[in-house]
Each structure stands twice: as structure tokens, then as C-alpha cells.
Image (tube, rainbow, N blue to C red; front, side, top):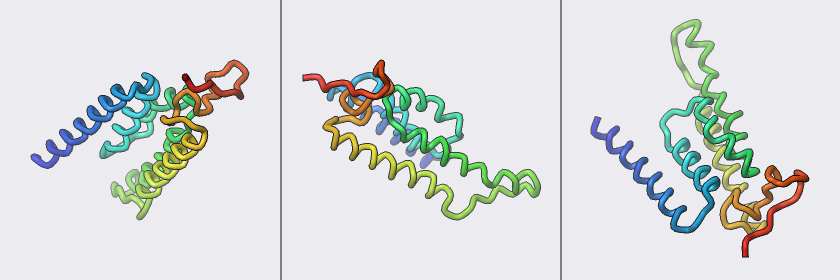
Length: 145
């Protein structure tokens, strides 16, 4: 019980520290909200597909795709459902969770690298190909000077 309380406290401190760090750096509210929700979900012990509903609007608005990848890979969590319904045994396939989170982390790293190449400091920040926000659907916002 004490370990569970300690783990929860650690996650809260990490998320609060992240939020404070983003605020100090002057990151925009949408980008900051995206990172806070994303890190909170990544540190959660269990993520049901509907938990990602908080993240998907931010991803689409900012032109990011990590949560879209996660919304597909999170469905692996329900592979054992057939076994549960028939035999009341919940047995996750070996490596399913590692694949789910591995794909998300790899895509997040790829996304961050792509944003650095464009010249944006924060994935999803203006200047990082935010085509979803442009009127023609294909341009980018200039970086603030």
C-alpha cells in the first residue's frame, strides 16, 4: 500500500514539474496541455482506449500523430478479451504491452526529431508544420521572432 501511494506521489510530482517547466519556458497552452496529458497517460498503470480521448483533440489541432498511433496500439490491451469471456482467464500475449508502448515511444522520438529538423523547439509548436491550423491545409505557421 505504501509503495502504491509513493508511486502515485512520484507521478504527480513529475507531472507538476513538467507543467511548471513548460510554463517557465513559455510554451503555448495547447502544446503544454498536450505534454501534460501525454506524460500523465504514459505514466499511468493502465490506459483504456477512451483515456486517449483527452489527448486526440490536442494532437489533431497541433498536427501531431503520436496519440493517433497510440489509439491503434492500445487496442492490443483487449486481445485477451476472448479468453476472458470464454474461460474467465485474462492472459496478455507476451510482448503486447511492450509493443504498444514501444511503438508510441518510437513514434514520439521520431516526431521530436522531425520537429527539431524543421526548427521547432517543441513538437506541436508554431513553426512545426501545423497544417491542421492553416486555412489552405498545407502551409506552416512562421516561427515568432
